[in-house]
Length: 256
Image 1 (tube, rainbow, N blue to C red):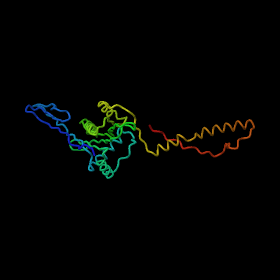
Image 2: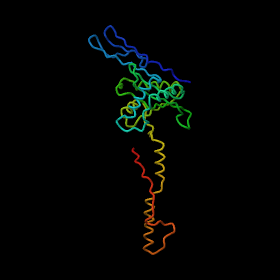
Image 3: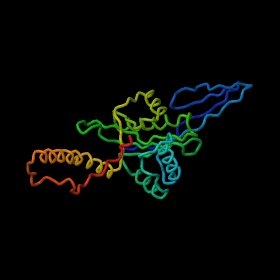
Image 4: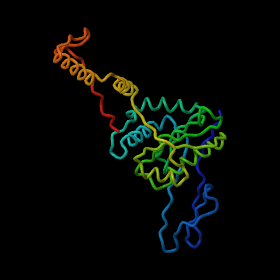
């Protein structure tokens, strides 16, 4: 199984004799002056770590799924949050999946971010593969600390390790801030993902293809009325005006 072993991001803080704060970070190369001085307080940078999810992360993952499914206060088509026990079983399965990874992001030792990575063919007609990032989410209380960027950086590293030439991210259309963030990273919109219950789609298909009985009844009533005025006999299969007629169920609103 060609899966990268996740490790903490190497980042160290140093204070110079002059009171200046320097940060050494392997992602950005040389030390970077973050500010501070002899007479000024220095804000300590929060520690960020990205790793594969473990069974012990189930409670945090369920909480983040609940946040994800109620984003922007709008009804979600995502499945309801699972129980912690069910989440533990699911997380354990992902640890042995060579084509998928469930990542969590920690901020100061607490799980506040998640992302699901899938490695698949880019299309049924191409040999190239792609890594798709789904269910990317960072808790509101942990934003503006680079957690989302760190999750995507791990996805890029895995894609490069697996020789995937392409990267895709699924993001809700209503998530403006998230989409702007992804656009700044060079990810452009390639389509719209829609989600529904299988039974709902089957019922709508049946409604779309059902004969319009109301229009058929109106047409036959017109024929019956004209024949009655002309004194012509009615066809054998013509229904009487008082015949029982069944109507198809009215399709539900699409809600989109």
